[in-house]
Each structure stands twice: as C-alpha cells, then as structure tokens.
Image (cartoon, rainbow, N blue to C red):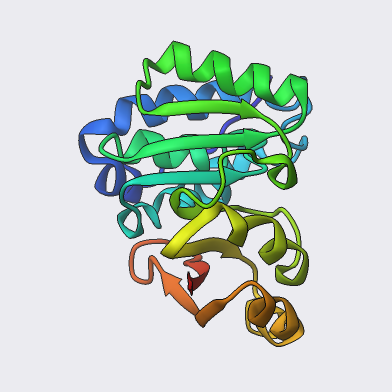
Length: 207
C-alpha cells in the first residue's frame, strides 16, 4: 500500500480554486510515479512538501509563455500549469515514457495551457521566444545556463529551482553567465512562513 503524504494546510492557500486539480495530480504521481520511473520509492510520503509545494510556491513569478526544461514527472512544469492557468507552458522533455506521462496528465486534468514537446533543450528549434524558462533538479548552473538561456527572449528570465548550494553554483558559472548574457543573477528564498522548507530560486535576466 502506497502512503501519500497528507495534504499540508498551505496547499489550499497556494493553489486556491485549483486545489482539486493539484490533488488529482499529486495522487496520480504518488500512486504511479515509482512504477513508471518518475519518482523514487521514498517520495510518496513527502510528495506534497518536498515536490508539489516546492514547485507551486514560485508560480507568482511567471507570466506569458514559459518553458520547463527536463520536465520529467511534471515538476515544476505541470504543477505550475495547474497553479497558473493564465500562463502558457511548454514542457520540454526528451524521454519517451516521461513525455507519455506528461501528455496523459495534461489530458486527464484538462489543461489547455500546456504543450508537451519531446526534445532536448539543446535541440529547441524555435529560437529565443520564451518569456521565461524554469527547471528543477536538472543540473548545475554551469551546465544549465547554456541550454536554457538560448530559449529566452531579450529581457526574459531564467527562474530555476535550486538547492542549498545555489550561491556557490552562481560563482562556478560566472563564465557561462557572461557568455550567454545572463545578468542580475541572484538567489531568492520563496515561501518563508508558508512552507516548512522554503524554496530556493535562481533568478536572472537574459540580455
């Protein structure tokens, strides 16, 4: 029997009138995520706090047309699409089985603001057209910046969920930040006073 973490009180505050969709997605991921190779066996008991709310709390940062690179199980892209139906999301994921999962969830949840694209970010053909790009648990900034910045329009943003080492990653990625014209790089803490463990976000502008 798979035990999924009980929904924290903050979930309804973050998702508001979209909470039922968030519950449906969380349940589906908790019940089927491990068997489909999307999450590990230890994740269902901490799914809300560690993954869903960690992703959803950054939703107010976005507008326009946003890409999620390496969307995987839909973290953060699908969660953000649930929280922000007014934003257009393109989920960029190279693995066929993950693309199948994402497409199934988009259809099941009736999300008309999501496009799923099977591709590596490096193979993106549309040019720098996105207002922002996000990613979560993909790679270090020195690897991530070269594959995300080229997707973003002039003046657009990189808004990347990172771990405790985020500040050090900025220092290690100085060369890549300069090369790809990424400016005003900083780490913001989001969700303090709302989440038990707030989210760390790398934010920067592409010029």
